[in-house]
Image (cartoon, rainbow, N blue to C red; front, side, top):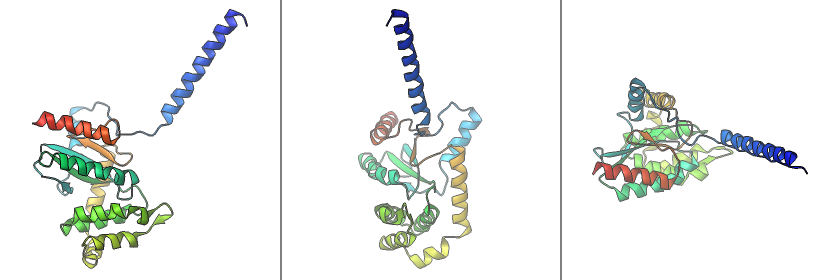
Length: 222
């Protein structure tokens, strides 16, 4: 093969590799919310949408560092990240709080969220959350949600089931689901779990990335 043909062939191959690689990147799902710079008013709106007065809080309410998690009770990745959040809370018991926001993306998640809201009203949010996550492989099946199992798990954690069933469709709980759904759109949450630390999105999803971001914010707050 002469030199001009060799150069042209090499160039064509390089261009092909570039476009294949670009296609693979474009098809990858977004790992975080849109992190483009926002105007002052837009940023204020987003910050207000991250935390609501009713949002369940794990940890001291006056902690200097706040993690906001948009989670789905039926989400496998949320279940996998929950021990990481527990580890962070144990490492920084007085310095970190976790604000839980609902993102009911999966089949049956809206009912699971209603179970959690009734648990919050009975001061049982944390034990019922952990019970639902532990039993998630049984009730959040890909073949269809088995909510009877979710209810049984909540009962085992101490939830008054009769009272919960009476309250689960109340106007207050309906408003929580409506507001959280609206806030998901405001902050552009597309998948669960999605994390923010002191209002900033976790740009690269992962346990170590979250731990490192929290560490930096804790050290800065000290």
